[in-house]
Length: 256
Image 1 (cartoon, helix red, strand yellow):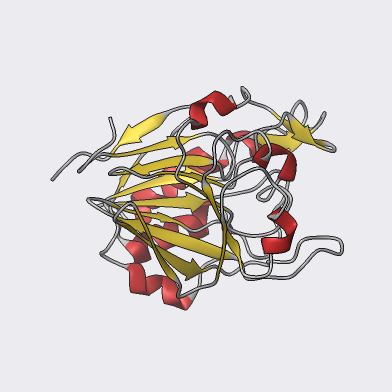
Image 2 (spheres, one colour):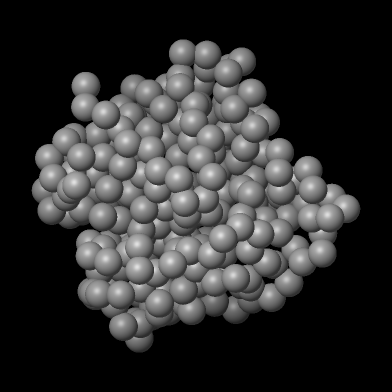
């Protein structure tokens, strides 16, 4: 139940999470479809009925597996749509609420919960000819503090968040057999845990989408990043709790 001191995060696959801190309900990078071109969802699809009464939708960058217009059209209600600077025109015709264009350093207030936009080290260009904007993450701070970095590699300013966080949601892979620049693999994500020192860390951006036909003969990149992150974080940051969530599972951040 929403209200003061309520905090829950539900992992819905890839970079899609429902983050509830006190009263606000914020959905990140919603991709609700069964696939995009040759990339197919390998786990149960997300039902948009879960998203009743959303306050905001946060888009971390313009890549199609994070800013999916077809998925955004499925979201009910009129939540505020928070997008990187330069992407307002991409989402302007969606049947959602007001659009807020933001960049690192911006701060918003959502039902008395503080929403801070932070940088990410990742390309923000929407391919092939879409706009270019910053890749961003966010820190949601109320009775609990949750860090959602979007897609990112390690960057020096990440250290400024150390000691502030109750939960860090850390991307550990992607949707293919390899990952390119601007991403963390399980080892680098574990290094982020050691630098951020959250009370709890959860791996995201793995185990949801995979190229059609590839899982049968190359399953490891789909199945192993999450467990590999748990193992590496246990070595590099043994004092930090780590939780592995399957799509659809939630974790409550308890008071205290």
